[in-house]
Image 1 (cartoon, rainbow, N blue to C red):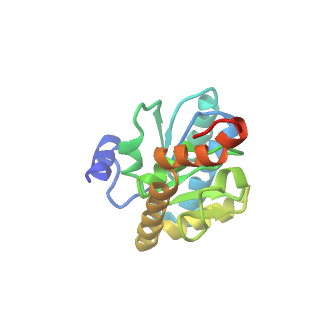
Image 2 (cartoon, rainbow, N blue to C red):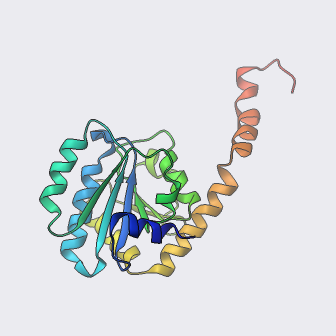
Length: 201
């Protein structure tokens, strides 16, 4: 319940700021540079949104991303949280997750943000957006479009009831479709008969 207050205190943030985060390995494939540029564009075009971006994770792309962040930090705040063993307290304290990855199998970061009842903004790539229903459990922007992503983030920053609605729907979807028991049941029904056709359950 106090996750946001703790996050504001830890990073010295103003209560009125709009906190967006990305979670994952800092590698070019995750396209966190897109997230940095998007937040910078949001801050430039809509300064009243007071956006903050928290990058959670570490990896080989960190120095390049820090260089990009230095160029835009005059208009917005970029935080490198580093490697975090438990992302749950952060996810529960932010307003939105953006996941601009170039591709995924099934993103755990997206599922965890949904479980934390946070709206997720993703590109229109089937492997990344597969768990998101646009306008119901998250928002999908045209892949590669900074303007599309920026406008969706602004929409969420200025509409708390929308953030809450999307977050609640996202959490319900995770609980209904992505719990371990459901995964085991689906595996037994769909996969086991193919792998072991002569085994009796």
